Length: 197
Image (cartoon, rainbow, N blue to C red; front, side, top):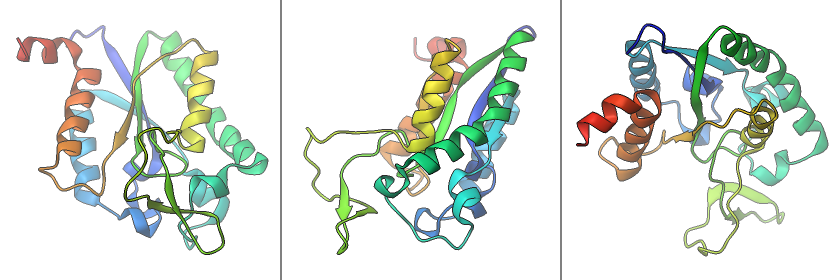
């Protein structure tokens, strides 16, 4: 890596502090350790934003679907939480750093990238449990915070890869392998292209 290629990445807070994560998504410290070790070894600075679910509802919250968070109040809360991280992004870019991407959390209604069809509970509201046999034509949305972050970055004319951290997948799974491949392409594109030749 060139000394001039100084890089930063935006990540969801629970990837550094798994205690923020709602219990359904698991508190996978070894996977967070692996992620942070990799980023630090590649000299990638980390910008994180506070967990919007924890700051809105505390640690004792019940798991919910995207539908429950998709309201004016929670969206404004997410925008407020992004003010300082976005100022940091602007400051780093102004000083010749490169934003390489964003890492959210798989199956998070707020920080996920691919939120598809989920089961509906007895109250006819969306549950956090994915549907077993989703229709390929079902819409796939970003989590609320990821969606707002995408809008904020677009306003700055910044277009970077959005990745999902597969916390519930076993180490040998295809999703885990694909995540690491995509992250390495994002963080070290030159090295990755040389390896694949």
